[in-house]
Image (cartoon, rainbow, N blue to C red; front, side, top):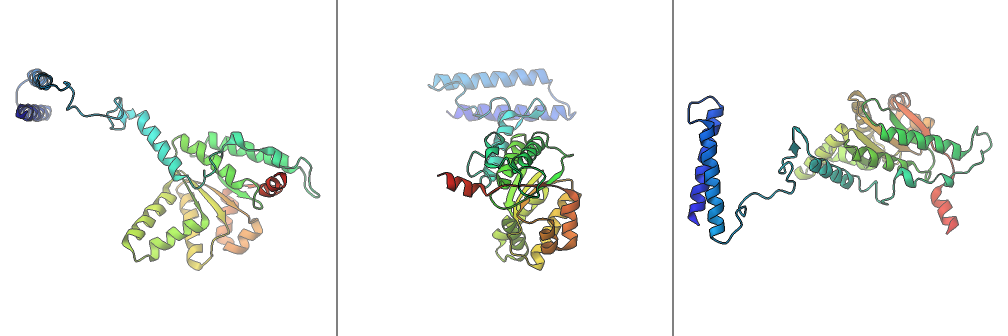
Length: 294
């Protein structure tokens, strides 16, 4: 149907006239151009039907009819783009959300003993109730005034689990969230600095930008990375840059304050001790408890 091509060309010509009219150039009245455009479109639909096709057969198809896949509707971000953003956030957090049940609703306080240990002012369960409440409030009210958090305590006490629950809630609220282990993060910095492969270097640079700029960074297993002069400098730069930029970070580590000072030196220890709210996890290794109960 060569007439279809002619009609489409004529409609595009009218669009150019409308653009020129909008920029102040002389031309035919806009009402006349609109009437002619509608007549051409009606002729196009009729021609399609005459040849056995639906009148809208050549119209563009959109996944979202509200915004026509532009991501904007009525001057606001469309719900389809928000949903897509949340899907991408969840995919990026897949290593952290690997179990699929890392939510505040599934966090079990019964794994923590109700009796206080010798020399402790309260029981592990009481301490973890406070930490749980702090983390849930943090996630549900996350914003520019939120503090940085540092989870400390032995392995298997739920530090990564609560980090994941925070990440899930903040990502679903539309904030940009990134997750990495300390070793994985520093490996990105090394590839960006030293890799001779251009693609690998570019990927690492993109990842580093994300880690530096995201609203919330979940940094897991601090203290398990191989420490060199370069990685120590990179870690300090990351933490200092995020602090200066007002970006929030949740760090988990098995190290206590003395361990951090001894491993990273006074400069980084000062940042972590002075700029982070410390939450000390207590109790027994949950993995060991689960094994005993099987």
